Image 1: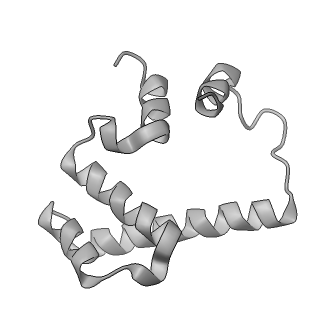
Image 2 (image 1 turned 180 degrees about the horizontal axis):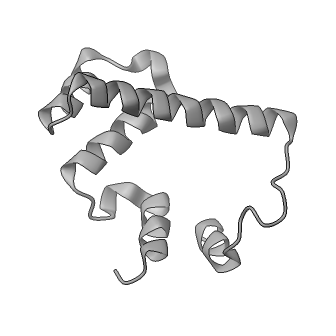
Length: 100
């Protein structure tokens, strides 16, 4: 894939088939589950992260980062906050994310 923006679009559309390495796949599997069903996280989910080389401190950082973004997007959505002009600078990139 040529452009890193194209890769981001590919990952956003379907990260499972985006050719990511096993650590990135494990992170996204965990964060997706945390986003959709946080109370469903099990020891096996943590072990899946450890099995690809993440230490406990790494796992804490993954969970905190995912939790922060989950909080932030829900907060912004709940209050109907609009992004300031210029925040999404690359119109082509944003349109690529939104197109099917």
